[in-house]
Structure formats: structure tokens, C-alpha cells
Amino acid sequence: MPVTSTRRNLTIALTFLLAGCATTVPVSVVVPARFPDAPLLRTVYVGDLQGHGGIAVRDALETRLSRHTLDGRLFFTTVRDQRRADGLYGGRMIDARSNEEYYETTQSVCVRSGDDLCASRVNRQVTCTRYSIDLAAQVELIDARSGHIVYSRDHRNRAQDSWCPGQERGRTYDQLEYEAAQGIAGAVLLDVAPHNQQFTASFFTNSDTVSEASRPTFEQATDLAQNDAAYDACQQWSALEPAEPNSAGLLLNLGICSELVGDTNAAENYYYRVMELDPSLNNRAQQGIRRARIAAAGVDQLADIADAERDSWD
Image 1 (cartoon, rainbow, N blue to C red):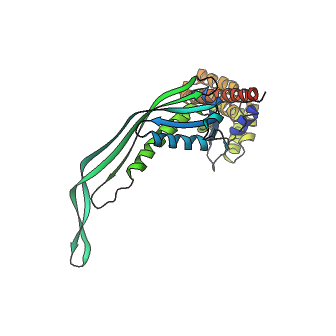
Image 2: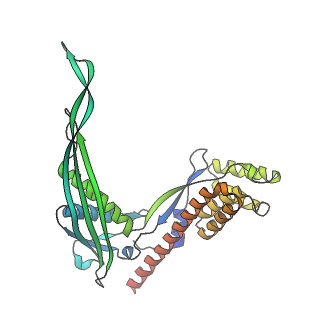
Image 3: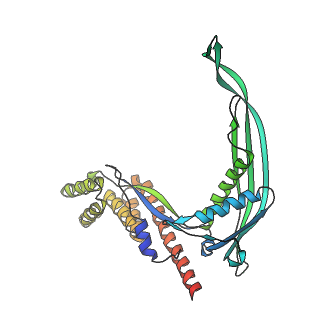
């Protein structure tokens, strides 16, 4: 999937829905990959990881990479011929161990009386079984063109199942091993791929934050936001700013409105002003700054990916 029109795509990603009468809005942003060189390698080959459990980790990682989407489109292309790949995933297993242990617990059991199979119930001490599998892997990504390692990190994950007398074991060894491997693959994906994530922001609804003359407009804007007309609400709140430059609640709303149209610089500026004016809103303002910075970093990373793709076409 070519990553183009970055600013436009982010604006689309930052659209939001209001549920019912709530003034809490979900804000969708593109969270950048933790290792910025990794998502530049879009056509990838996943090789074996040496050691016990390596096949499960390889299969889980290949599945995660091949199914990862960004804004509804597949992000990576996985290939079976490593000569066609830009990036080569591999590595080794650090540890793979299983453990079976027993523990005592109280279980309610039926007591039969005559033909009644469960005439009463009593609590009895029973011995149950807990089975766990721990996997630890060092996963690497190599740039096939340069031979440089662009990603290398250790990951560990555990999967377990338990059962008591009268219960069937829920998952087989292979199923538990693959579950543990999926956890490792999911952690790798956060490192190497940008992804969509939804945060939550809440508008400030108390009209006491503005002067008496501005309250009717502020309250009308709040009503609009509560009735699925948040764009119009933001316009009305914005119109109040010249008259209410020191209203922390109004500025908080304008910060959220700026996020929702992709203006992360304006959002940060609003949130810093909120913290200067009203320390009681520091937590909400700091959360907004964090969201805005993540969104800005996501835009920058998508631009880098788009530039790399254009260079590859030239």
C-alpha cells in the first residue's frame, strides 16, 4: 500500500464519533513504530528462529505481519522467497520451557441421593493442574539491501491453562505454545509498524468557565456536541476565544477541536495555556499534549515512509 497524502490521511484518521449524549470523544491517531527504520521495509520474509519454539514464533510473526493494516489497508507484503524481500526477519529462541504444577482449591460438587444426581452440593478440597509455557525470543530484522540490522530485541511471553477434576483440559501443548508465540509477535509488531490507535478526550462542559455574556453560546455549543454536531460546536467555541482568552475550559475544548482536524501544533499550544491558567486541568491537558505529540510523530513517520517509497520508484 503506497503511503501518500499523509496530511489528508491523518485528518481522515482524526475524525470522531459522539455516542448518544456523551461529550467524550474517541480520537484516532497513527502511532509510529518504535523503531523508525523498520517500517521502511515493507516487503518482508520471515525466516526460522533457531531453537525449540522457533517455528511457532515464526508462524505467529508471519501471520501478524501479513494481516497488519493501517487505515484499513494491508501495510506489509510477506513473501516466501527471501530474494524478493526488502527486509528479512529471523533470530533465535532464548528460552522455551514448560511447567506443570498442582494447587489446592475448593470446588462445589454434587451429592447424589437416590435417583437425584445432585440432591445437594458440598464444598470439597480438590487438586487442580496448571500448565504453562514460557517462550523467549530474540527477533531481528535485516535490511536485505545493506545487510544492516535495523531491529533487534528480546521478547518473552507466557501462556497457561488450568483444570480441576471433572474438567477437560482446554488447550493442547501446541495451542499454548502458539498463544505464547502470538504474544511475542504482537510485541514485535508494535516495534516495527505504525498502527491506528484510539484515545479518548472529554470536552469541558461547565459554562462557568466563561463570562456570563458568553455562557449562552458556550452552552449551545455543548448541546451541539452532545447531539452529533461537534464540528459546529467547535466553530462556536472558537468564536468565543477572542472574548474569553483566559478561559481554561474553553481552551481545553479548542485543544481537542484542533486535534480532531489534525492541527497538532495548535492543540499543544492550547493545552500549555490550559495548564498555565488552571492547574486542576493539568492531567487532561497533559493527556492532550501526549496525544498531539504521538499524532505528530505518526505524521512524520508516514511522510518518511512515503519518501522512501518514492525513492524506490525513481
